[in-house]
Image 1 (cartoon, rainbow, N blue to C red):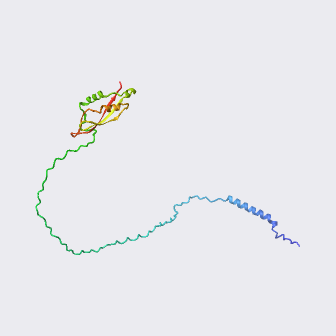
Image 2 (cartoon, rainbow, N blue to C red):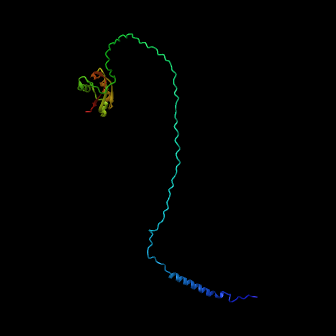
Image 3 (cartoon, helix red, strand yellow):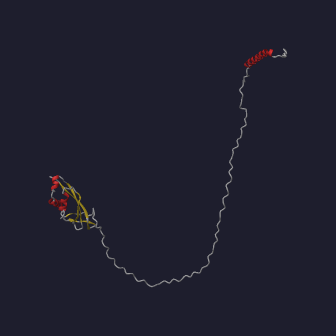
Length: 222
């Protein structure tokens, strides 16, 4: 058997009414919210009299431990040892008063003259020169010198430099060619000086010495 609902307790029949009432209420509240005006403040608010208590920040101080006390100085008191008394016998000093004979000073012989080195000099106080002068020396060369046929044939000429030493006696020794031209010219110069003329020796501090010399001998084709 189906149960029947009480029409007085059945709320579904009034749901449309409740919905309309709720909708009207919501619309009314919305209109009121738009119509509501906030109150404007005519005077500005003075904030200068407002006191704000500042928070005091306490600085953190690092507390260092105290340094250790300095070490106590060590006082060294050496024990002073008194030396034993020593008896030292001091012998008597006897001075010999015998007279010393006068010293005999022998006469000093004259010192030898300064030794001059034997090596040849390049430059001395008095340079050597040929006996009769350089003009006579070159006349000797021109008189005895012959132009080598080999050098004349190939047309070679030039200057041969003759090197030698004038010794303490004025003799020409150690005769060599310092610089030559070849083709028989060097040999010709050495040939004529196999019997060289005499020289006046050079002197250093008044003593005859050996002196190096170099002279040119020219070969010129006519």
